[in-house]
Image 1: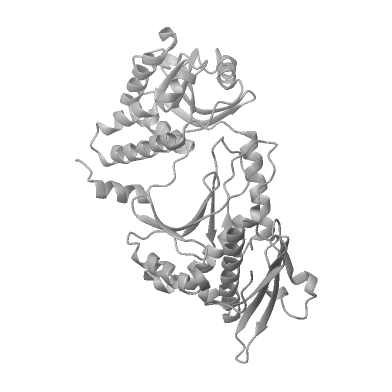
Image 2: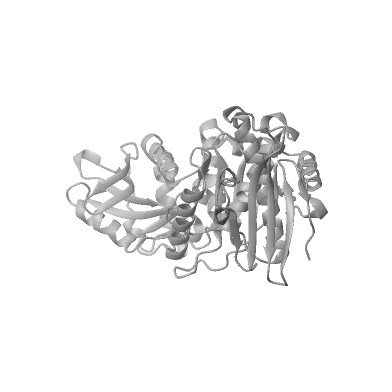
Length: 447
């Protein structure tokens, strides 16, 4: 029965993320319980085999068994299949390597052959090696005897009408799309180093009880997106840093952008003379929208590249988090940061809103002047008058000056920050502002 676009979208929303091990599970079950699948698999392998005589057939497929993650002293085989053990004879073995996007490891096909040779005459009479991957891997299958494509597997299950096969069809569709979105991923030393550097900076700056962020891992050449999520944010709300294009998005699973435009309108009204950092509302995929702000692009991810100015990124992340937390009452009920509010004291909520306004003000100032954010970013609790002035001064690289900050209270115990930024870059000048959790007020104008 055909699946409508709406049904397909709903199915995709609830499918688990696909990894190579999920293909292992699908193959293991099919080989073990479906004799027809072995016949199909042998036919597909012969189409791509360099030497078709290695793809050994059999007269009885019902004795086929499969084992995932078969490990010997020579290494690990993703899926080991044995078939054709008639009248007590040794079976034929297929040593299968699954790939969705990963590149080939050094001598990977050779090591599969070594494992096949190791078991020959003891566990199996003969063997052949097979790569299960996207069809575009076929040019790089190397010394594997054959390749059975994900597309061929998808076609096999798509011809069937039972629910189990329909589920497998959707999993394979998702797997193919995952490959086509990025392509083959070979581990890149420069990008791997960069992601480790970024993760280390996150550990220094982001509070672990408040944030979940990407940890260091092996990365491929263009693995340049980084994700952040508040620990108590509703499902689907996250921040995405597109490092190469210089954009940071606060993504919300909302199909109507109208509430987001209202949030932007209210925030713009809180800053004097249009000094609020520019916030765009942009679509993300088919059913999401995001607040988006620009940050400096990263163009060099090579192993020897200089570290970027992380202060820009964390200022933008903190600003968007504050924007969301303070304005979530304007969003649909399911997206409001109720858990966040319930878990914080009123004092913490006020300080967080105040810090978001301060960082937005500082960021718009340095962008306007063509300079850089101070680093590390200010901790509001350390800005009171009892703290030495030198510890409340935040120099901005390139400004020939910086921000002198002080946290104060009015007669009603409402907290605010007095900011005085100065520069000697175009002649000496300083400008004072009062920053509250809801607005920025100019107290004096500079040159």
